[in-house]
Length: 604
Image (cartoon, rainbow, N blue to C red; front, top):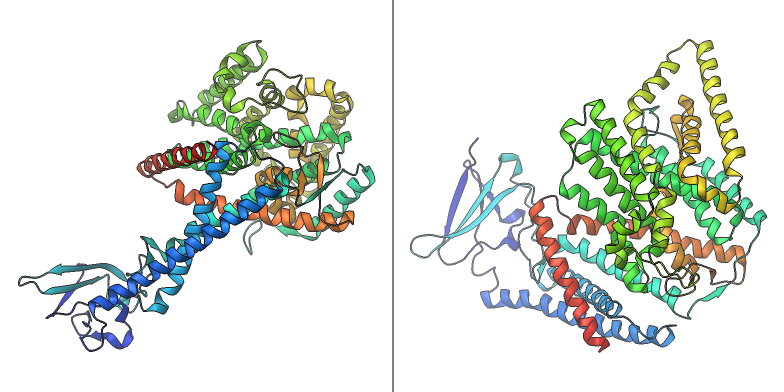
């Protein structure tokens, strides 16, 4: 249906969008026509320009005030900082944080004042009923307003004008707010771990307190038990998203408690938890690529942003090396491994023989890389600047790639097991469904057999491998970690009732595992310094449990906020088209170089 158009001539006065209110609308049989403002009711052209200028001046004034306040804040933080020799990157990123906060505050003030100062702005970009607005010049130099709409029902849906400050619409404030909030959080991270403002105390080593806290958290988690799926729908499929997030969540909590209480006795269990995270990298990514067949650049870049955006800024801000937060490096590397395994010859992924052959080839490459002496260092030597680590607590390790080889080597096979599980998932789901379809007697026997077999295998594993001392266990962990993971998968999904339920508390924690892992170093505990481990506790209050509660509340809230900010900025920085990604990459590269140059100048 062709859109209708209606034109209205105005002798000397253009249509003013800020005056398009219901009283200003006129209907006719032919359609909708905005009425040009008459000279008596509309402000003069010079007055309109002044109205538009005032919010911009207010923006500049507010941004200038924010920059001045930020400068004094930096001076104060420098006076209590434990380090005074800042790198050029630290100085450059500090300037970037200040500009982000100033830009947000200035635009926020400008947008807030625009309608109050009489500046209506421009038509909203999200106008649901507006198809197009065009002001053209008619013969004789008269202005013409052309309004095009989809249909009769959209006539009354014109949105109010949208304030624009220096090219930034009010609808674009979300990204600025996220950038400013992120800058403030990064300042807080530095304040906690690199200044003397907050005291640090020794860790309390107490198995009783550790296990008591774990039991209390589990009790709370059981109180948040929910059914999987949407309202009115019960999902009994194995390994649904809520269940895997729950798995990540309770492991992460015990992982950070392990650090907080220095509970070295559960080291082997922590190794298994990290292996389970890597297993999920293989399982989740293979499932996505195998089912969705989405090998586009936007999806891959969004995943890289999710894994590395936060850790990159923490490294620069705190002057730490990337490998201090080795979990991010490991997940990034194994994500690349899954991507290339699925992408190469992806047009044949539906062929079982080809798919298994590719997984076998990935296994062979992994064996060559990690189990043939000399290959690993030859391959990763060019990346030593990024993956190298210089541990101040272990100066005896002169090989900068030692940490990367040790950490990634412990779990260099389990991601492949994750891909195999994802590939076998349809078969596994069918077997569980077949058991559920059995008569009640046979079903009970089948489930008992499955659970009993899993427990027997798990008991054998614990006796044979898990109870070994730390160093001996590390030798067998890369080749045996898949066994307890398989046992857990079988037990957790043994019955329909177990599959249909999850603990929401742990599922929520599972969504922010990356953020809680990184922030535990700096705002929940305190490190020994540059490239240092979290060997001390953050002390705000003299009472241990009260201090733990308050510090933990701030820690989890900020972890969640960083997670949300990462998503908001990802959507802006990584658009869904290749050209947009290229343009934004160039802009970010130029901005990075510029801020680094500013840092070099300030340091000099």
